[in-house]
Image (cartoon, rainbow, N blue to C red; front, side):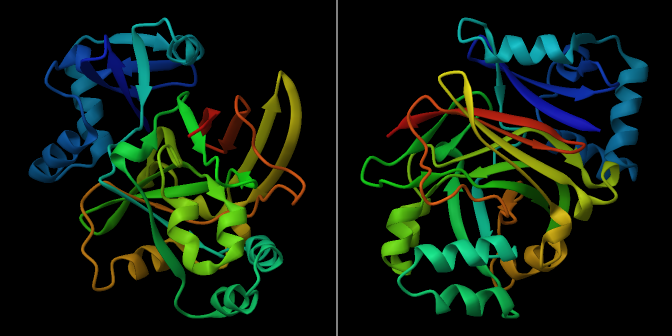
Length: 302
């Protein structure tokens, strides 16, 4: 199942779930106090049922409103609409893993004055993991993502993200780890400035529960960038090329490091635009992952 969070009239949060290829059910219309997936988790823990079983019981017991999924996406994209899409969970912390694909290792070596650093971490037992964002720095789907005006080389990094709850992988979503490559390439110690700033990240549009996605290690990821209505970049890869498992990355993140529930971990990218390409203000970035959906954002200079 795919779960979405919506914001109505800038004040009322709604939890919704996709129940068919075309239909999304508004769970909050069924139970007004149900606004977050964490409430379903707590209920399922008490009843010893799965989150999906808990959801199905709610839908079977109570009437609910529905949306057509395409109509809902258009509505959330419309800046004049009273409905907007939120990140599927409010992650207190968003972490990221780097150099987990061979393509990423090659590109990071090429951009850096100290390429051996990236060669070593790609083959090392311990992965590169760093704090990427916080909830207030993370953009919702269809909102602006940011590029720094003190960087001349900025790129999106399309990634599969895992959501953690009670130290386990709750589910998966899409992440955009926007990066200032010229800053990081100047010196690896500048990584926090290249990665952490206003609107430097986006996740969404939904969370797919782990029990609904049995094979996340073989998902296609596509990234497109449009400029003034014209496609200027397009590339596809697969999570099958990831050199580390999701469980391994999750374990390393939480080793001697207690993270709050609903923490997100971006698992790395294999799609890197060429050196001559940089994001510009008003570019539109779309990241599509099989069985999850499409995360769309417009670029803003911050």
